[in-house]
Image 1 (cartoon, rainbow, N blue to C red):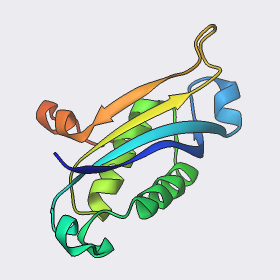
Image 2 (spheres, rainbow, N blue to C red; image 1 turned 90 degrees about the vertical axis):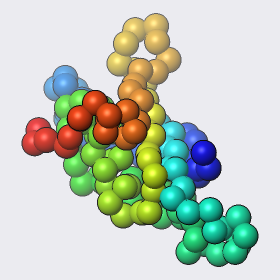
Image 3 (cartoon, one colour; image 1 turned 90 degrees about the horizontal axis):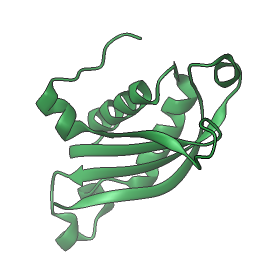
Length: 127
């Protein structure tokens, strides 16, 4: 399936359970894949016929600045739904990682796939 991707997007966010994490922002590293609904761009060469990854990155930056969640899982679900709401997508897959949380681990994180969420009945619910 055709998709656009963004690797290693660095964003600032307030997310975490502990007081240290909740007290100041931290840098998260995201990988984003967005399934294309149309295949016209492969022939048309028009940005309007695909998903603009620069616009996806800006949306993610904006949402991360505007939200505060305890769990990466909640943030990942929120970001997937925000991308699906703004762009013509088939699906969204997000990987979010943060560093300095678990001793002797370079990074920890979550992968959220909107296709799996739809199949399992996961929905965005209040925090």
